[in-house]
Length: 194
Image 1 (cartoon, helix red, strand yellow):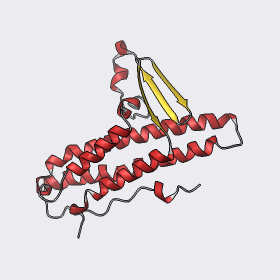
Image 2 (tube, helix red, strand yellow; image 1 turned 180 degrees about the vertical axis):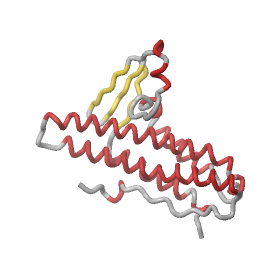
Image 3 (cartoon, helix red, strand yellow; image 1 turned 120 degrees about the vertical axis):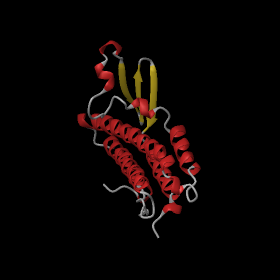
Image 4 (cartoon, one colour; image 1 turned 90 degrees about the horizontal axis):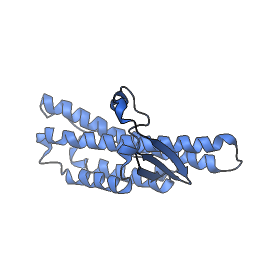
């Protein structure tokens, strides 16, 4: 099964770090790595939408419901990681003083705003799902939370201590994420290697 071209994320163009200080070069490499990951998480979300779409088509089997749930959880993890990569990249921008005259961070801020508006709260939704390494909440046994995850059609919902967060696993949202990634990458055009 091949994803439609409009759901495939763009690749980050080569960016130059040759004429910056060593400190800025390290920050710039980390910034670019976070930006590269936007493509990965966008593709993961699109792939999750594809798996979900495949699983809801006939013939029906016992496994298809579970495939839908797996796709929805993976899509949510992709959204959470997308948000984390975008935030991490934005936190590094102040370290890049040599970029100030060539790069307007407001475009990247707008990408982040659009993401938060489309997928509000996803960082909370999946803090519990797919985390690797020690989990800070697990160490504090006094604050156990009641969690419930469910799937209604294309809408994945998670409720934790009475707070519900949800998102729709659709090709429309996959295309939105792909377009958002293109916008994020185009905001970097002044920094492209020449």
